[in-house]
Image: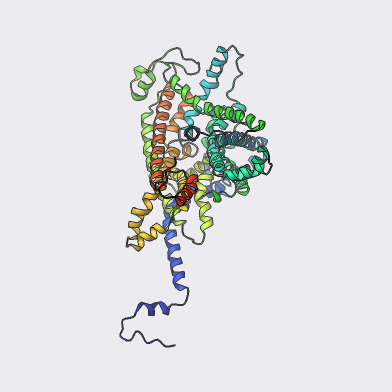
Length: 310
Length: 307
């Protein structure tokens, strides 16, 4: 049907609107919003591109270069890869890194879960609960380097622990420094803070009536924990372990200061090869470490999609 | 509720584990405080001689008459401290702005959203030493001189920004967009809406992001060691000093840093609590439903204050 508007040049809004086919306005808005989104993303993406994506690409690239004296030669050479893959110490290094990470994560997970569960279920005073939670997460905000340098006076042969043991008339402890056990213990103490908080929050979000329902239907406390609380708190546990492993994989300082380099991690080896200018080997090890780290993080994401926690 | 035997046992075990965690978390600070007053060595406990000399050394790094221990490293920590503070402040501000803009973008649906999400987290999930090495090599290739102003700052922003990004996402997902629309309907421009509506609601997130940015940058060593060139931040100076010899000066430094950071976090928590009360009422979020029901069943209880 012909509409009899727009005779005198001035076009009413309705005419403009009806000219456009159905849905185009929505599409225009969508396009506009998408453009705004990309503009807002620009600074963040630029930083990531320069300081994360480009370095990662460079690592892969340099792992195929060759070292000619002190100079890097840009070629395609598998020299670094072959030397790394042929070297039995590399496999020991990768294995011990993975082993250390897994042991620390298990310890951190079990201890963090226990502590978080205790705090959420057995500390009934709200004020005390808040205070204890704050105490448990506060050290995260302080320098971890500062904390690990007190390890020596704490655990050294004439350190605090042996002083206390001696005062109590107990036998002195053997050296708890510069070995893998000490390193794992130190890392556990450093990274357990990541798990306690998230586990506590996840547990305290569970509706008490769900637990009451489980118990009243005859499930024991253990069965309730295993079948109701643990699955519901899984998110918190995975968040904690995810962040712990982010720090763990790159942590070379703890291994050096407390492990004494006896059981080096891949990260420590990378930093040492880089320090002596062996860039292609360092890059090759970095590619391997990146692969391991992403694999572990992907397993976490598979166990629990962390985007659900956002 | 009556506790079963297993639960009673667990309560004891859990309590012991929790106490042990607190001890292992705080014992280092206590020991550090005590040792910072030791005059000579820190390897023996308890120290036999007490003095303030370490603090004096810390603040008068050029007064060589204070250094009387043979083989003691002469380290001036004041310059690394000021560099670390500058770098951390810059990092936290820039990273927070980038993170907030990115998180605001994520309220829209746009093509490539999923891929961008993972890309933004790359600076956080990649093991630090890899990014340090990679950026160092990349900077060499494009002839970018390494130093704290260039590679250092960028590395620190890429490291801390994802933390802020996540914080903002968490806040924005619980953010009621209708209040923005209300402002827009009432004639506020996009910028005014952001400034007067969105930003005040996001204030706790902004502070959290700034705090993350500052502490993570201040403490960063994994990626910094290779990208700072000749500049020395505090963690680099500390790790350099430990390879020579750990002296009481380090513990004096550590004690002061710990005190300042505890004070900073305490201040933040107080602010956070105040903001939470301002925007979300005095009730704990879990209790809100109950309070609503109470309010519905009877008049009064406008403030929603629990007994």
